Image (cartoon, rainbow, N blue to C red; front, side, top):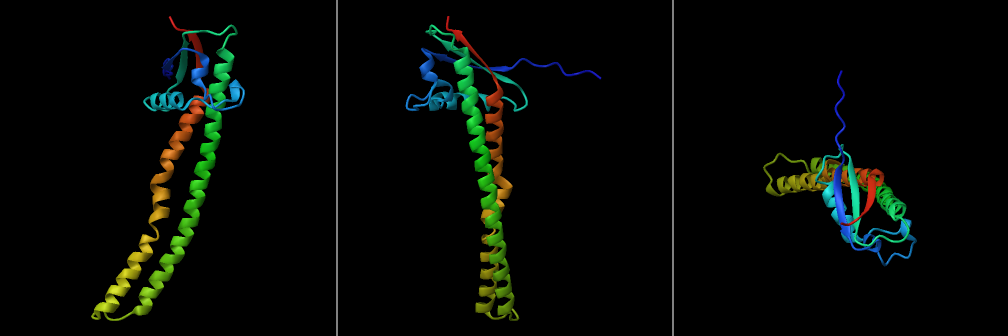
Amino acid sequence: MREKAKSPPHKIELNLREIGQLFNTMDPAPFPEKDLDSDAEEFILNWVGEFPLNEPVSLVVHLAELPAENPQAVVEQGVHHYFAYRARLNRMELRRLLSDGQKSLLIGLAFLSVCLIASRAIGGDGSATFRSIARESLTIAGWVAMWRPMQIYLYDWWPVRRRGQLYRKLARMRVDVRQKI
């Protein structure tokens, strides 16, 4: 059985004057723990989103001015630390969303049950217009209460999960710092 040849990583390239442009200047933390600049983060996320999730990526930071000390370790640690932090926040966001979905589902099911029971209690043979409208309105109201939990469980969690996968991938990607030529 032949193994698939490993493809080289897709490169995301940043051109900066100096290392400080990569990090958020308002964050008082030391360099490896600083947040990334929002523009740099958005640029990286947009590019990595263009590539298949299972294919490797690498970040190449081109600096016009290299500092006296080699910035490789600081930049690599900073990028990995930031995206690992974002992945942890994303896991919390996904858990919170699914918890909200669970609560919404329980509330929705309870409300739907009450509405269906009330609809049956109204009864009637269907000839009375008011009764018919009341029964249908209760049925519709009960199903509308199920809208939010269904939206969460069918649609809302996918983008949150995908973003978390991107963050985890970025937290492990290769990072290279080079002098701009």
